[in-house]
Image 1: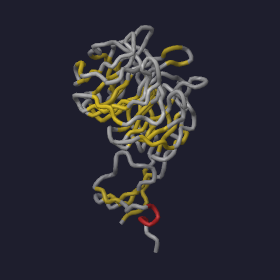
Image 2: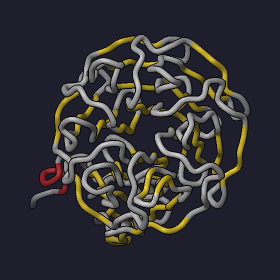
Image 3: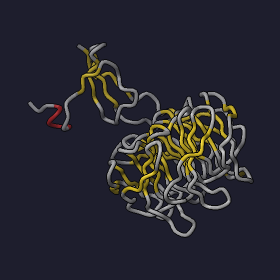
Length: 319
């Protein structure tokens, strides 16, 4: 008789509790409830209205989750230093960045974030770390750039890649260890306005200009090209991990509402944003994410939208 391992290449996992963010197609046996469950795939999902940011802006950065996010920097007609935190319902202004800038990127959590790169009147290499209360200036990126991508689990372990250095689009990738930035192996494709999700050892880079559908996977050492986005775009929203990501909105023609989910192999179109926009930013995971502010057809918007992918876990059997 053919076994599940022979078909799928892996055994059914025995877990004491259901995983919080199971991969598409993952099956497990819950040893507490004695029930076999599986992630049967992504639904169409939907965006709902969340609390508006206090200062509408585009070209900002973010970190954290859908219920505990941090948004900082950006442009509201002038370059901003404002920082706001989200509790799942509303945004609250907290202490500002030391250096106002836009087109920066971020990594980490609401209480342990990193903001780096961007434009403060010129392209900058500035890096600041957030401890839940204040921003502190720390060691700079090796390559000053704006419209780069970043990701990472905390303010002590981050990855920065791509962007525009003031003269050229760049492939440069750098890792942050809590003290210094180190140059590592380059992206396969130089571009700006791309987005990233994941960690310093497992990251995903997608979108950007030129080649706005390109997707690359980072394994901690090298980048590898994988399957493209369905719709080319840049300055889009982002959430998730290298195996379970969400891409939404962005600049193309026109400003987009399109949302796509990544299952580790392919991108699939799901439910659109209510407000089309580019130059936005995202936070969270691929099943619970935020689309924050950005540039909408009527101008810069304060709108936050909350993504819910719906329940994709199904009971497959019990003892």
